[in-house]
Image 1: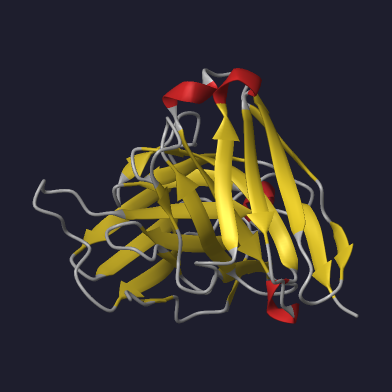
Image 2: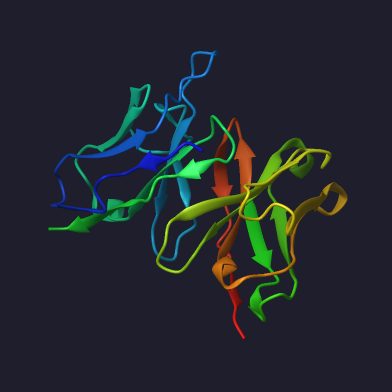
Length: 112
Length: 117
C-alpha cells in the first residue's frame, strides 16, 4: 500500500505567519490522466472535517485563497499564508490513487 | 446545505455486531459515491469503506474486509455500515463522508464506537 508521511507532528507558528505542511508519498501519485490523487483536510474541534484541496492543488469551494496546495510526484505541500486564528487545527493528506486509500499521520498547527 | 448525520454507535463487546447509519440531506444522494472513515482515539484517519452510486460496487481495506459491509438505500438517502466480529482495534469515531472526484468533500460529525468487554 502507499504510505503517506507527514514528517512534522506539530508546527508552532504565530498568527500572520506563513506555514508549509509537507506530505511525502512512498510512490508517485500521478495518474495517466495527468492528475495527482492527493487531497488535504482540516480537522478542528467541534467542527466537521473540511476538505481543502484535491488533485494536489485545486481548492474546494469556499476555501480561502490563503490555502495553497502544491507539489508533484511524491512530494506535496499545503501552504497557509497569513495564518488566521481559525487555522490552528490538524491537517491530513490523503492519497486516492490506489486502494487502500491512505491518510498521512497528520500535522497539528499550534500557537507559538 | 449538505448534511450527514451518523447514528447507531455505542459500547459493544468483542465479537459482537453493530450497524451504523448515516442520514444524508441537502444533495441528490443517489448521484454520489459514499464512504466511511474512522479515527481511533487520539489517532489519525483511516478509510474504511466506499460504495458506488447504485450500491453494486463496494471497496474495503484488508483491515475490515470480510467483517464490515457498506450498503445504501437511495430511496431513504441513507448509508449504512454493518460491522461484525468487532475487535478492540475497531474502537473509533466513525465518519460518514460524501465522495466526489476521488476525495471526500463533505463529512459528518461522527459517531463513537467502543469495543470492550
